Image (cartoon, rainbow, N blue to C red):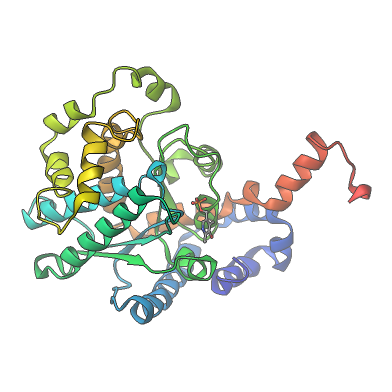
Length: 343
Ligand SMILES: *Cc1c(COP(=O)(O)O)cnc(C)c1O
């Protein structure tokens, strides 16, 4: 935060003193100070960071984003378990519904992806190509020009993260419960004032506990609920029942979006199973409807800018636990049994 978000660092320094970067526990002192005045200052800073990111993305990607849009961000390695494809399918669904006039209240949103695939991970590369193709379709459709933009940035790395993370309104942390050890991107986004749209997986659990469930958008099946359905789960039943979801999934094969055999393989992996995995191994379809409900709820809630900004500030003020200093101190005491004089 000190490096990539000097504007936010200044705001916090002014309230609780400059040494908070070396003693993150002090962040909690912000909580009783959060008032409309601070929220307005925070919202102005978020706006500045979004303007700065718009410049970077225009330069690097040739895509012009509007800083008035909600910035909904999913940045992390590309992996099936991180479910970038779930995010992409929900965007395609929103796109179709907007065109049908079904979402008249939808707040304009820019969906920003950043990710790399491992070199030999063909299915991850198929997901990257699919997202770039839906981005081209959506960004070139005048029917949704004022409502929806999608960008998959090239060469996502730490330097790019420094631009994207301070500009995020929504942090997508959507792996199925039980798959993510912790995650660290979720913490970076929290500390820079984004709300989490996420499952009860990895450190999202602690993030929601620290900041309060009412300041996050938690959805999806829990670990025990997933374990209970694992043996009998049939993704095709959900596909058959949910017409919106079906229309989005079908774009992997029906030519609405330019696709090839790699996306056809994604389609079969979801519905029939492939590569020794059961159908929909990562439960995209199982969590789809609660994901869409949460996604539309955060979109509605954004309209109340003061209340939304308050949620973002509550996330910042609750970030102390995710300090690496705190983590190492706890390891020293509880695991290594060494005292401060030894380090
Ligand atoms: C933090 C970070 C990650 C890890 O993100 P997760 O969401 O925890 O998987 C990956 N890549 C970069 C560049 C990061 O900064």
